[in-house]
Amino acid sequence: MTRAFIAFAVVLAAQQATAAPSKKSIEPDADKILRQMTDYLASLQSFTVRTAVADEVSLKSGEKIQMMSNAEISVQRPNHLRSTQRGGNGLGIWYDGQSMTIACGSSGTYQTLPGPPTMDAAIDQMRDKFDIDAPGADLLFSRPYDILTEQVTSGRLIGRETIDGVPVNHLAFRGDQIDWQLWIKDGPQPMPLRYVITTKDVPGHPQFSVDMSWTAQANLPAATFQFQAPAGAKPATAVVASCGASL
Figure 1 (cartoon, rainbow, N blue to C red):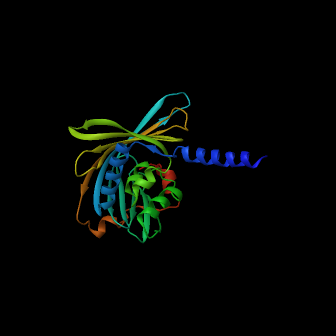
Figure 2 (figure 1 turned 120 degrees about the vertical axis):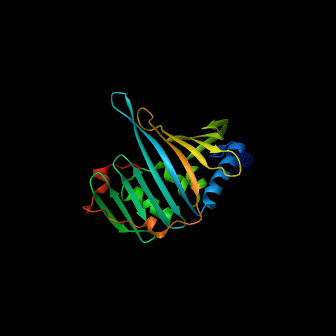
Figure 3 (figure 1 turned 90 degrees about the horizontal axis):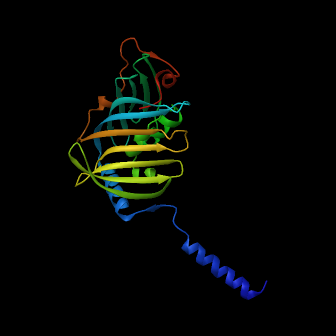
């Protein structure tokens, strides 16, 4: 191989590397709105959010079933979190920076483990050790933009819409395994009002959707995040398995 050919090959490789598209191809308008939302959420030190969840299950027959639930989530950064399901199996989580308790109202059981030092780590522990499915928890991380876009390959602004009369910006993102959409309140308080996830690597492409209502608060009482076992409740080691693994 001549030196000239080697030099040409090196230059060509460099040009191809320079021209290679970025892994993430998010349109500027969509990226700007998403960053405004995630920065705003990260700035909230104390808040509650009420959720209405529709969790879709695809059956082997091809039929799709939606499981509905409601929850109330309270957060005090950097290391306090409570999530209690209203109705359903009554699955709840209490985390106060020192311990984490998972409780199931329908079975009257609970499990307490030492808690990690941060809420980010607590959410990871909730998913890894307790096997709790909580897609909406991505919005609660200290750096939600990084979590949301970790596997994104493209994103765009669909347009301006309304939810219950509130103007929102509708964003859509694609990834290798999941696609997701956000409807973000327009204006100086860009809170997400709806979050929809489509799982593409599962037959039937089931969807998880959550509608959210946010309330920023100065402080929440310490008792909010401390679990008090109700009368008759019993400690257990497999609470989630007996209750259902979704919040």
